[in-house]
Length: 241
Image (cartoon, rainbow, N blue to C red; front, side, top):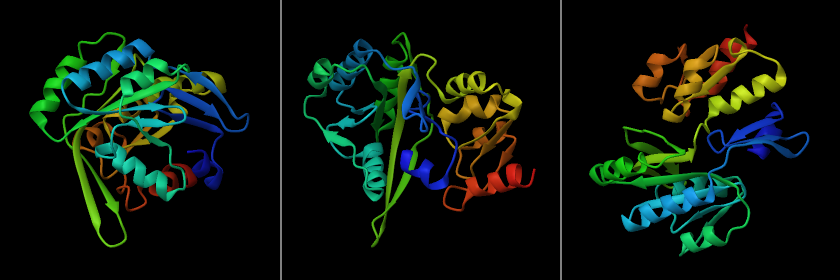
């Protein structure tokens, strides 16, 4: 995010980890956090291990996982392409987290190809208190271009963050800091974790590759992520305003 922000000379504020952290580029420091507690991370890891389901733990500096598959495979491809590889393959993630001294757990992602197995895990996860479990009813699909062929990666997916850690909550913190209202905010999204900010911002825009329900709640729908949808939104609603 830092490299992209510098390249396009954007606002100094970066919201990442699905709203778990806000970083000020100009001051090179974190100004807001809403991290998962270590005991919650260990509880979720134990559930995943007992049910043999794939998961990864995202921290401020690295992502730890047992193998490069599902969402981490796509993340690995994207970050390798940008020269920023921050994934560590760990055999015993539970032990790693136990010994990890820094409390900087942004989120946990959980994936599976089998809808029945994934639904069962979702039911268990929703019973955990003090966390938010992203409720995604559709299969996530990513495409990786290897140069010779395009590989499709598809899986059922959820993100677990600390309670009330989301993009809109983080934006509300910035609104207060900058003295601006929700009516002055334009947001662009394409997935379930964008719903709250799409609903509440003055201008909520859905990408063309968004799932149908998100498009319905948005103020406008632009082209998809492979056809410069973000540029379309900026030109239409900001540059021509």
